[in-house]
Length: 306
Ligand code: GLN
Image 1 (cartoon, rainbow, N blue to C red):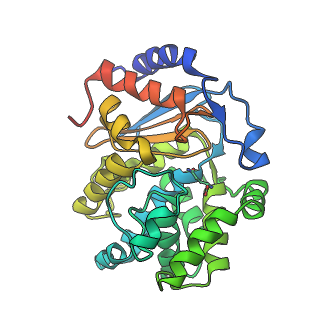
Image 2 (tube, rainbow, N blue to C red; image 1 turned 90 degrees about the vertical axis):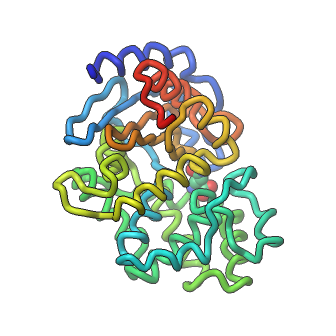
């Protein structure tokens, strides 16, 4: 497969979709990003990386961090990971990523780890396991991406906290059901820091390599059991793009996780991990040009999981 040629073609196809939609504006620090940006990268399972456009420009990972917090909790739990599934489900929610409505009827157990409520529970678990849920994630991402310069964006983290009433409400509500182990202020603070990490398409495609390698890191060491990587990919497919996960599976046919920074990572197990970035979002919070690019990638290559 000539990845570079495929990516050039995918980028040309996606170009008309760039600027369609709206850049996230719930915090000023994200609103300032130009809607014109577009980048895409592929890291194959042998460690070769290809990219076009703004593929080396760092952006705010936002909810893509939810994939890595779940992976880290599984890795840190040393096989005892099933306990996390008593506190968070694995069904699509069909509601927006920051919705509160299902929590009351479902005893404070979020539907899945990739909506905000679920990620707060996972972050809480990571806080218990590591003592520092955000720094442990930053170190993990530096190691997996091979980029020692990865950092938090203080302006984004501060802005998230300043406009964090909804996430605080989710955390307090779950705490009222006894579904948090740590104090709410510390859980939401670490969650905001995780969302604020800045990475490029290259960094994210490389860091997500273990999902395509059935749990193995680039150096061949094992991060996760193969069945754990399978489980993360399965939940990405069914829940990774919020209330558009069905539509996304229909169009793209890959496990994927999006963030409101405009990034989407997608996994082709056994082959490669992709990351695409373009900041303008559709109404459900997924990058419009990013989804168009992944759609075209699987159309051109025939490499959906179906
Ligand atoms: N920081 C965002 C929030 O908590 C992340 C949401 C997202 O990327 N969908 O609202």
